[in-house]
Image 1 (cartoon, rainbow, N blue to C red):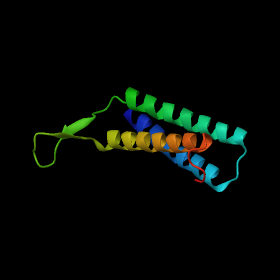
Image 2: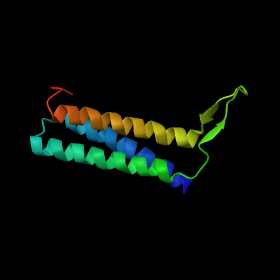
Image 3: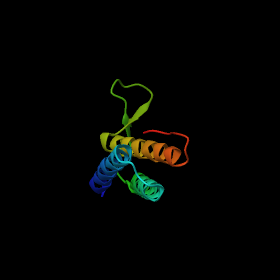
Image 4: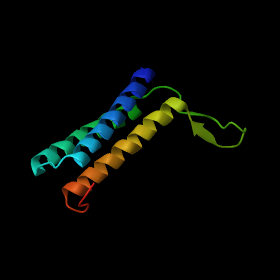
Amino acid sequence: MAIAMVLAAIVTGVLAFLNYLWQASANLTPALQIISVLISLALTVITIIAAIVYNGRRLRPSFDGGWYSIWTLRYGIIMLSLLGNLSVLVVLALHLFGVIRHL
């Protein structure tokens, strides 16, 4: 189950990047821009679900034996994908609302 969540996060991250490239490279109509934002929203929700459902180890002791803990590689990949998906969602939404004129 943990591997499936990591793969889901990787796939949603790649799809979010491709969604961003699609909107940045094409002159989309407002209807297609809305569809692009909805796709990005769906990918972000899937990544959030993957982060919540992930049942593997999330933290491990630090490499230098310090008092802090770090994320495991698998959980770090999920969090990195979530950060990327949220970033794409925010940029596409700002572009849709006219705050950002050009991507």
